[in-house]
Image (tube, rainbow, N blue to C red; front, side, top):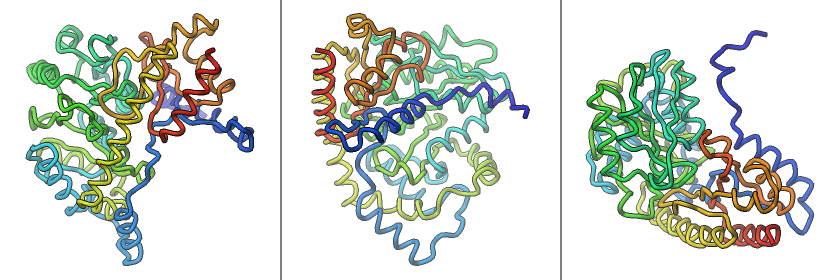
Length: 394
């Protein structure tokens, strides 16, 4: 069977490939004294709050399960709009918000609406792998620009200016970022957008971890800069609804009917049950619970990052958001005679029974010396992982 060039150009999602290996090993350890500790997948251990679960059950019982508009329930769009106002002090009209089948669908719709074959999109190296594949799926090309710890592993305006070429269409950023948990300095983001805007390009910002910011310096949406910035968001991370597959996209008004037309044909609409459930995310009781959970994520970071540092696993940029630690394992690998982070991840899995993600997924510049730890697991699990790593590395 002949496979399309588009499909052939999409690399495996190595995070999930490693996860499959870890799950297989976990089955053999299920009844052992050291069952697998999973620090590889970026999924909160918290589930949807009680009000959200009750809203979903109520929608099912009352038969609210038919198709919605392709842009989402009007009431949900209004709730999201009000949340931008109360949380960030930014006016985002509901008419600019398109509810999607997860942030993945939002990124796909944005790329299909704006990228032509051969267009290039500038992105930082390291960055979330699926983002560059959304560009590839639209027949564009992701151009990864190496970043440093001094840059917080984010692009600079000078880099964007220098890398801009005749085929460049724009930039795709993430703040906070997966895998680093680092955010773009707001002043630098403003300068980047200034360069892009002057070139007639597009600025897309993945903000799915934005509500999980721990530093007031960074916790502002890019939408505060310019209405022409495209923001991608999700109910998965802060709102703890990963498997519900619900997200949203904020775009300039003229782009809404374009996105709607694509969404009608590709998805019809997001999950109706998930949308009705998500209305309860914004209830004061739910927000209070989310904020308590955000504090717990911060406490996990505050414990785990120094613990890694003490083991010789350097985290050059302390994450200011999300729930990841991007750790340099090169010194430990050199001491143990391990080739790179890929082999290190499997050694940790086999010897310490801790699943982590090697840097291979996230780019090509120095990623072979980094591993990503997810701190979305419980504090007890994190403490167990540190103890096992300590024993292994000793």
